[in-house]
Length: 555
Image 1 (cartoon, rainbow, N blue to C red):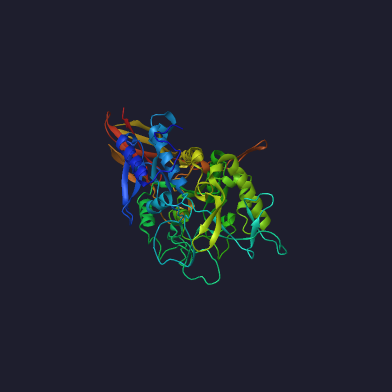
Image 2 (image 1 turned 60 degrees about the horizontal axis):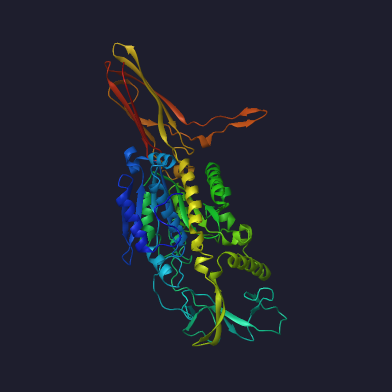
């Protein structure tokens, strides 16, 4: 895929801004760059809309929304969003991309948490969404880069009462000490860091310094007791800006929110099983998932069912759930990067809620073998260090941030290209209004019969989803006929919604053809009075399906 910028490293805020401004300045006929506001640390929350403005304005076409970096450390997601933006604009004159830009609008918020991502990229720290509130420091071992190698790893402390020992087959890894094991070298394990506060006779890892989770802050089944949910829905300026942006763009019908990791595509609903979902919407999600699997190799999983949730234990307040359940948008979460799958660990094994010690060690061995073969620099051998509080310890392990949570930079372009290929197919599901035929037939004495055939060329219906209908957010298909005195028929009005070809119910088999086609076309008729040479025009529009116009001259 042709791009202007390289995708072999992770862009910080300054570079991300440079790229967005570059695209805005070099492609004025395609882009609109907007700051959705300033973060608490003064960074712009950038959004960009992209379409071929020669073929209609941003709000005149059905739209796809792409975002990333809801979670600060999931920087692969922001790069995937930037990559799709780059591919669209760099290739805007290539036939396939030109057709997409003529037909659709694309909206991008590449980095929802610029403050959090900056901490992640420029310090050894990890954090969920954002570096606030600062709060009080917690007691325990506070994660810190003691050996100044830029990475916070594992720390093992020689301890004859320790619960861990080196595995005989792979001594770089630790296994849990067996109940009857008395001979050997044993360790207590902690994150690399310093002791802070009072912890008595226990060593414990201090709770995370920052706990806010933007993906628990949306007003959809929000639960205040859930960690990271915030004080109330959308109390973070970043999540509020995203919600307001989507509300202001009713033409958005499909959406990909890029996260990491695991190599899977997650579809709402998250608060309940997809068995309770509308069957049509469920089938459309499965169709979207099939595209993702074809392009990315990642399976589709329902959020609730795939993660073994229960009525009392499920992810609430998620952005994709809000987009679907509250706005009727077919949103999916792309969990990019699949080190475990590449290492031979299936998605089902990854999601197993309770792993035995033996199974956990087996998976770690497979992961380490992959790292040895593909990015050995990510692993640090156990190295002695004199700890200022604990005495002699050893620091070692992998660079979690850029092996597990994000792909090693050498794999970044490949991951971005997979995400872009999927997204450029997903957008094609959107409904698209068209006027297939518009004719005027003189009846004599300046009476004229005008006929039109309106069609939806898309896979999705003009109402997008049953969920959008349930939320009463669908706008009708509006028609307007101008240029002549109308004697029969409406000059302005609404017509019944149009299905897409994805709702075709015919079945084809060797024994015959059954069922019925989708109701994706409407025939309209007027009688008007106008002399020969008069031009009449038909305009149709729908917020979710775009607009079209046609004209003809009366003979």
